Image (cartoon, rainbow, N blue to C red; front, side):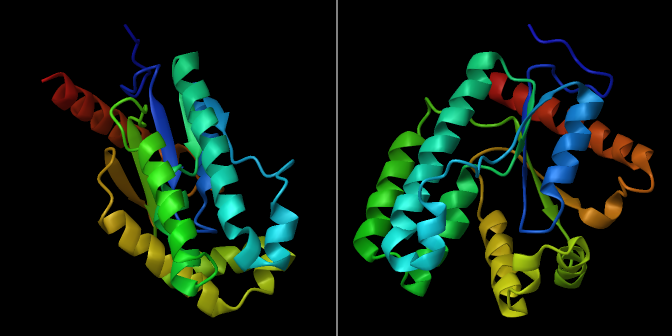
Length: 223
């Protein structure tokens, strides 16, 4: 039997933070984990054998890259639940197929055959009753202008050189994806509703919302 934190969040809960590039997933993941005494799970980029080749040739390596990410995220999700929960996760396994693989397919950098194979593999691994889904997916959202300002403010060279049109397409894809996502409970959070840099306590109302959402969803599952 799990204990409840100060904010009514079960100590064995698994919370995933999702949203487009620059929306503040990593910052919120760390802040939530720190407040709750949870562990964090961040996307692993180091050691990826396909990443360099992918940026040189999208068409040849997009399928390989997506399968690699799927395998790594699947193993990480399994590890989190085998540990017993108590994790905040930066980015979900669902975004890989709903956003990135589909974008490659739509743009012609992944063949229809490869996309179908990837989707079938994803469905067989993830979309089953046996795969442990998070207690809650927090979707961070805001206006495109606010998110673009954040991308520009953090000053990463590769992001600064990326055309604005790319960020707008990514933003629109995320909005479409979350509007149709129902695999696990979702809580939408506007990035202007808290300010972790200047007001650390602004996270408290968010934690209370998380606690109520998870307890409600767990009651529905039990009933």
